[in-house]
Image 1 (cartoon, one colour):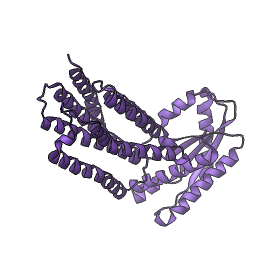
Image 2: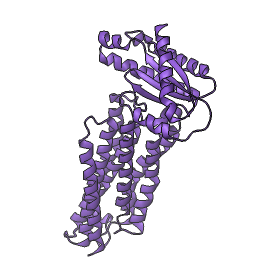
Image 3: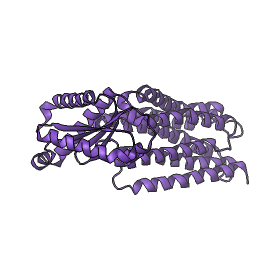
Image 4: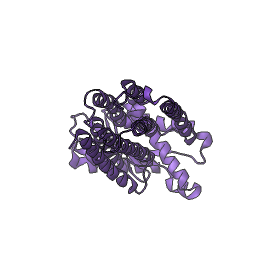
Amino acid sequence: MSDFVFYAQASLGCVCILLLLLYSIKKLPTPELKFNLYYNLVLWHILYFTSDSIWALVSDGIIPKTTFSVLAVNYSNAIIDAFLFYSCFIFAEISTRPEMTRAQIRRLRMKLKIPIYVEAVLLLASFVVAPKFWLDENLEPKTYFYLVQMFLPFIYIMTVTIRGVARGFRPENRKNLKIYLIVASYTPGSIIAASAQVFFALTTPIFCFWCTMILLFIYLTLQNQLISTDPLTELNNRNQLQRYLQMPRDTKDHYVIMVDVDQFKQINDIYGHVEGDRALELVSKALKNACDSLGKTVFLCRYGGDEFLMIVPTEMPGIAIRVVKDCVKEEVSNRYSSLNFALKVSLGYALWDGRTSNFKASVAEADRMMSEDKRS
């Protein structure tokens, strides 16, 4: 078996793995936007690996090696490669910026596709007019063709990496920090893998193996977020709460704070569930702001229905309660003109010693105080 045949087989093996990922994503009942973006990213990898395997068969002569076949497969690789890294940019940019509107997303996609279309037209024209400019006497692409092929992908991936690192450590983006870091690791790894394959081991599918490994890691990360995150508010859910309770912690006092939306049933009954969901989103955003003010060690989750739970390591719970109330008031005042209803919350808190066995008792006490606050 020649090295090129092994290369084609390895690439098609990666394609089979990625096809299983596509099938798994399609089976999701209500996939989020980030899963749709990830689906496109995987799809472009499949197309590239398939095109690359055909390139290997042409290079080995299994498919007749002519000027047309060599230029055709290399043209396919170049354009698909550009779309692949464009998809990586879109995935990182949109999936970590939930505030983007559909119009903003549409404009971003259109702008980023323009360089690819320009490259496709110019490259095709040069292949037709001067094919020998790109190929040597053995019908192999010259070095500068690979530089042209890697130019747009390099621009896309370096831009998204710089933007991701700049934004990833901001408090408001902490929830998506892992995605930023994954994309950041994809960048140097893919560049090194692609460069090593092009210049040192052309018949070793280094780039294919690296991309497949990263895509699998991204999928596992997204699945972990799916099972540990509330889809409406994007807060932690009860599953993540159970994980948090098992984590080691210091002896500093912890307070469990329960937050409940006042008269939430009436909001749903009078204004509809869409407005009810909006109320929950506003409260969750206010609580996120409160967590940023109190410090990154605060745990926040949607406990159930219209109830939220916070675990704050502090010796002064009164200050934490005041911060939460101020953040809710500020968020409501910012949205006051567009709200159809009065939005208020009730709070209760209780000391927790950090032991998992005593957590339910602390929650019950905080819930009792929250009920008293609601009645008063």
